[in-house]
Image (cartoon, rainbow, N blue to C red; front, top):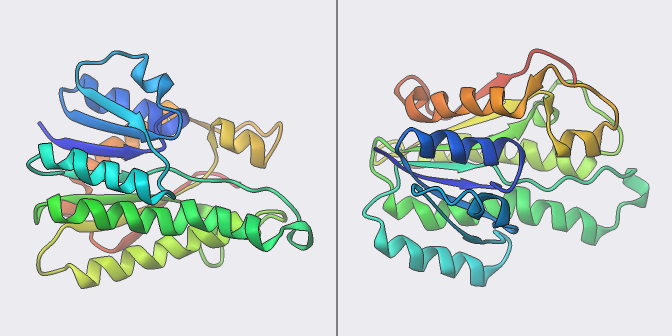
Length: 225
């Protein structure tokens, strides 16, 4: 039985991940700004509380909670903020808001959780094909896709910095998955992959991928976008 933290668990892939892990008997801490969907599951293996990873007070709340956990085996940085807006109309504040969640928030949560992680632990960060250098790009996603590129490089840096002590760090760049966020970015587009299908893949990778990979970007995509 593993102890697992998942951010962005109120909908889509994060919500499905929390259920999948919990149903297998793992202990899950499911974090999201709106924790009602996951708390309404009343699952005996899921703990949740409202959590905004861009707020220092919520990071302190997480630190206090983790005093009751001996270790954290898996951290899945899944929370993300999307902005689909032409670059010239995007304010500096809006750009910063995206980075606060997708980059600074990911770094802050990882920093808080790392002291609890064993050498064979696994940090999996969810990125996007839009953040992969050389991939197809789309207008309106300057803030979002560039932030997703940042966490790819962060993952490589963390793997190097912690290669002696662990844990392992990997990043998954997802292609199109049928979620509410995809609908916001590409209205009307029908993705070939459901949130549950992608969650099943991520679950397996989170549990075993660190045996084969560290500091690696895996492109989990069969389509464009």
